[in-house]
Image 1 (spheres, rainbow, N blue to C red):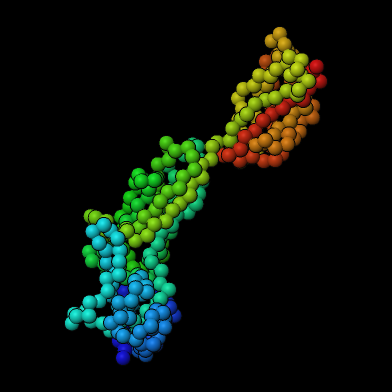
Image 2: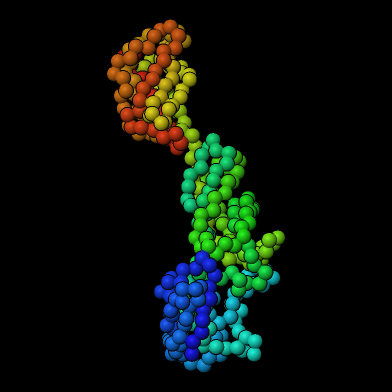
Length: 321
């Protein structure tokens, strides 16, 4: 018993042949495959059934409905649930061993999944990338299906929906889409749904994936500190214009020191900096802080710094007591 298997453009016949668990397959080089050598014992053993009856094998619940070749087809109900629509054994849809020729028991269903990525405090929109694999499924099995939909949800709220015409030549592709993150300020787990449908309506939910978004605040400036002895003696420091250049690991600000009565004083200080609560490191061992106006400081972070997710603190070590 044998048959000629057909497949759409975009399928690799050698992949079909190598994945097949049932029969002897030969590529004809014209978009068809000759399949012979069907054996009911092969089907029985592959499915793990205890019968050789053709009807019972064709109705087995162990058949992988996502296989390209199999008895029956994939369909869906009014709620969008997919199911294996098995043959009924009638004249127009008989039970046949030959329907197992080319069957791949390990076939995967079409799937979507997003890339895990960061988004930032100053982002208003970001582009997320979704991996879509059609696997070996033939969408023509499903009634009234010519399109797939990618739906992105935050909880139960749909934040983006995109429709694509099914293209068999793009078995694996990356879909990119922009989403609005302007109102978010926390980590997010977004749900990605893959639907099949018509040009106007989603019909069947095929797969659900997710993408993890990690929120990163802009790097924060904490404070300028004085050494404890100076602080205990009533000295304080004022500062302004705190900026960083994360690309070059530099920072700048302006400072002045005041005594307990609020008068400005001059002092030669050691300048230290800490990043994200780490050890203070010296960037200048002898910096003169003027007693008139603000003194500009500009240095490189020895430990480096990121534009997002870090914090930084400056400390002035003085001889003031």
